[in-house]
Image (cartoon, rainbow, N blue to C red; front, side, top):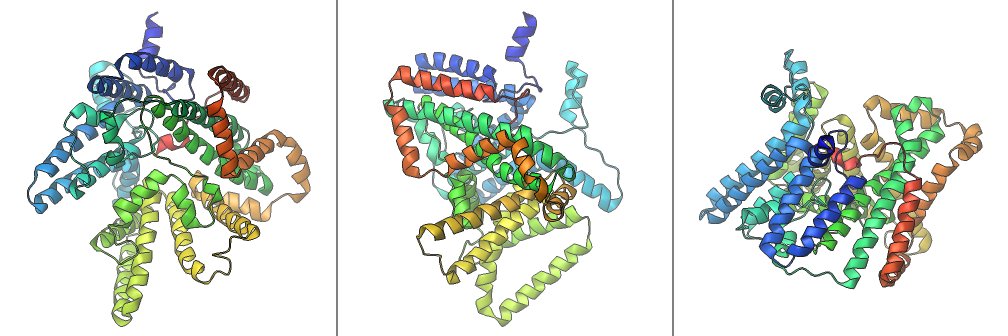
Length: 552
């Protein structure tokens, strides 16, 4: 009995609360049960959802709930200070404090080992990473945490970006501060989107806190449809091809032929989409059942006709965040700004630290001097170079947001190069404005393959692993064994084909399917939901797979 209660109410690192566990759905049913008595009383409703959101995060991330609490309290207080300040200089100082606090917390947990290893390498020191909170807990509470291992709090990149956007929007005068601290805490911690997005702006979500609860027949059908679609994407398609092909190939590329490596790479493009968009589909459906609307985060990204179009369709909440709070402040497509050079300095510092070569700092300084001289000689060149630097910095910083290693830097850099090249290519492309079916297919084909190619570095477990994969594809493709491998992996490839076909279905067909589901009576929805869940259950592996973006 005691063990059962402990499992229900205490954090278990081996069994975090995620959407694909039965435990979560028991939790959600109970949440809805009590919510049905509270939804008309807005203040009580918001406090209740704040409380269950914190319980959800504790069950998902353990004592890291205190990091979430710290980020919430600090930005709540700073937000009020920004609003009350009468002078722009004081507002800027408070905003700077918010940015410094959020980025310091983010950098500590995401880049602690990176900075420690780099300092030891550069200066021949022997610093070690120690989790002082774990040491205190072990001494005071008798726990057994590993004090040499610092894991990033689940979803830290998402909720720090969310709190930063609140402070920035207050500074810009786009929102007013939230009066009730529990309302603000609810905005930051709303459990459907807390650990893996979408990143929600205060201007989008906070007004919903004070609206009456509504759930129309259409919204109910849509919410159930989104939840089922998300579970099907994640568990039937994404997890199945990951367990049976992708994870094996990327763990040891040299043990598999070039064909298997290539199929694993194409499979990963499908998996990462099904995994991440599946999570946000479920989050949107869950939120809608409680009367809240979350922003769309994916819009059939593999239908994109160019790299720029892809980034308008993929992880849309992050793309728009980087655009509004990074790219435009740097000058966007107009010119460079002071923020451009700050961002450039940050990226160059990371390059030097990643390489461990101090002489690179001198080389970068020389490149900056040459750039300055060229702009003095050719003034028209300044805007062209500056705007493309803004684009590259945005993508490189987006890569570093995922992690401080060369694989993510290269992934971000390749996408930045793709965006810059497309800017020039579209001016001379013979089929840029063509809507012919063959031209459209060709553009989608090129874009998808380029994005898939860059994912070698996004998924690769090391630089050596990415090199091995490329070597196998180019030098050891194994054409003679393709027929036998098609037979051996037939179930995996059938699931992959199903996933891509469903993704590339016309919007009109998808809308008809959605509207048909919404129009069905309740008993039919129950039968269809049961059928989908039964199909998903048949594909389950021995261990549930975590969501990919939990690590970010």
